[in-house]
Length: 215
Length: 219
Image (tube, rainbow over all chains, first blue to last red; front, top):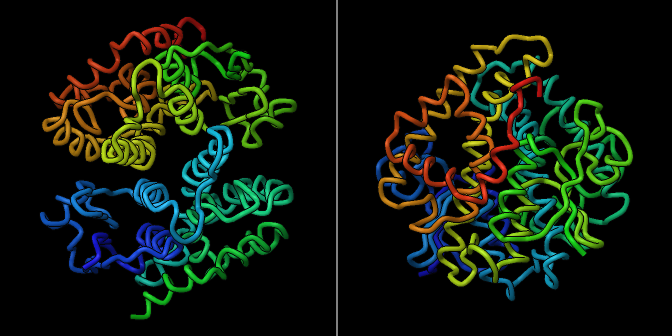
């Protein structure tokens, strides 16, 4: 049995972030499906794995972690010599550029894109009404962030480097949601962002993550 | 060549980085950016951070923004000197530190930041603090602090029985928070309160806290 276990849901963006990383690294893992509709993520058993009651939770032997970005950071370092190189090797200065763009995802991109995904993708899925004011506000915010990305991606093939890294991977789950909504125009109207989106969403590891939703 | 930090002494994000630099006993020069003149939204600063936010760190040919990325870089660069903030010699401890750094980023900060904004920044725009926003975020922060209360009843600091970057990341915003009427959220939770008193009394933070006087005496 694999030493790595991921407890989560294939529909959860945070779970998808971890699954994408594991598939890129080609490491074996066991997926433990958490029944969120039944509130399993708030059960005592699960809270022992993540006191915030959110998926995913992660185990590697007796190491237990939560927060998708902490989990992926661990996996990328622990299994650095397997599968896709997701880090920037070399000097501390070179690696710092990766940390920077990981923080840009967490602090600039995540909030407006998550809100738009919730309003335009998940709410209709659950049959709840979309808040048009929130959509407008967050489309404006996300647009400004993507303007910075457009400039960056005209200078660098991927966000942190000329090759795909964790910084790009972090964006996949929310981007995939947005592509299924009217907000995709924000991505498609910016040529370098659009090219980058097409490249990263076409990666085989990401297709494996999407295939899990159909099981 | 010494490190250059572009920012403002009263800014919590600049202070986050300065606290880290002091913990590592690293020399640096603070280059003041005039926020009130909008210097951070214009060239030449925009060339350093296209998001138009302080701080920015320059180390020779490296230029970084995002205070957490800068702090992580400093903690790594100086990992062999000063206090060990990242537990680099234990992969398990290092992973725990990362978890609680993410907790600050994804749970604590989004709840505390709007409260700070309402009490300190809204008045500058001529608006009174929006109580609905304060109440909504105070409720969220309370739930986060319940998890902290439980964790800090089992370990002395967030990632374990050692002070780390995860604890440090909370200092500057919480310092301003404690000046608001919402400070009870911290004071009513004994383990959280003890943790706060411990980490905020560290000399590296004390050096920075004295300049964090936003909103006082016409600042």
